[in-house]
Image 1 (cartoon, rainbow, N blue to C red):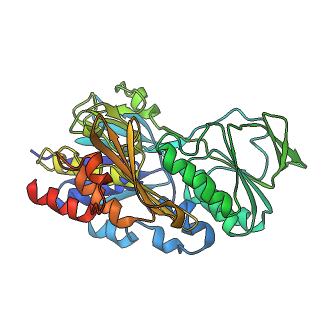
Image 2 (image 1 turned 180 degrees about the horizontal axis):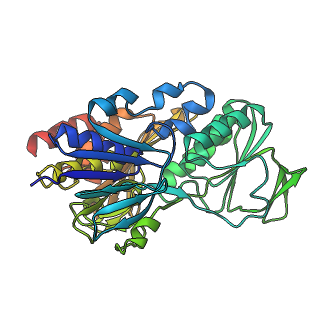
Image 3 (image 1 turned 45 degrees about the vertical axis):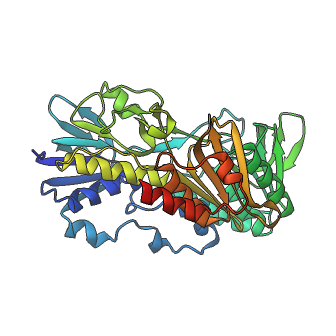
Length: 414
């Protein structure tokens, strides 16, 4: 039996997908979508890419036009937050003083900046990048900046730094780890990106951290490194990762462990409350069934569709292959699967012309593929990873290996 009403807290990619998929699945009850930001629900990936250069028009960011919400009977609450969940009364309290009852509650709370206790982080010219307002600020300041320092060599940091270098800025990335994007990339792909970005004029400092930000008249002017150097900087981006927004769940007494803990149907420890997207820690078949928190558009949309189907009366698990991407200058990095923990790699393509893939295996099984400017390999990998068996390292290593043909064979067999 369908609940009479669904309240979705969080108007990002995951929350908006839940709402859209509920109507697609034939759900006829009341739907409320609550977003803390005043803007219409928008896409986040362009914020660190085309939005910074002006290639992505603001209107192109909206996930749905404003009229769509009225047409679908979605009660849109923007610029307000949920301050408390009353699980007994089945209602949420809003920051504007309102109350909303729910039959089912979906938490799509997302994630926020990981803060670092860095002296000078409150100076003008020190920015983060998670929201549209922040992206507007970065874009405007980037246009005027001469020296850009990015603290953190993750996806967002590298995308902004690559854009800065393309715009002719003197750009430097400080990454405390011994390799770029070490949480998600193999050494082989990371080492290629290091050299590729250096050739494109980007300075990269590995094993290096910021000790303090130095300002004059309230504006940042330099970054002091932990090894005693001073780097000029009139724009500093702090991008050292994100943490899940779980305070509302904790306050409601839900189980939390590096995210809001959910089961295979994305239900929290309260069966009337679900969690999706960056804030959710869910069993992942591509991580050996372990609870895993994934930060990607693919995961947000896949979980949103699964939850909507379950609420509408068709219990559905999310078994889709995880995938991610990052555009850095003229380099498109695409990852299918989860490559961490691999013990063998096979490289196909040609690193010298910036077009190759790294096939990652663990205990003989394909666990992920990292592709640089090889979109056909990426699409084939997503099909292969969704089937067992897929391919072996020897098959990939063999002369004439055709990923597209192997994927077609796996689909036909499966």
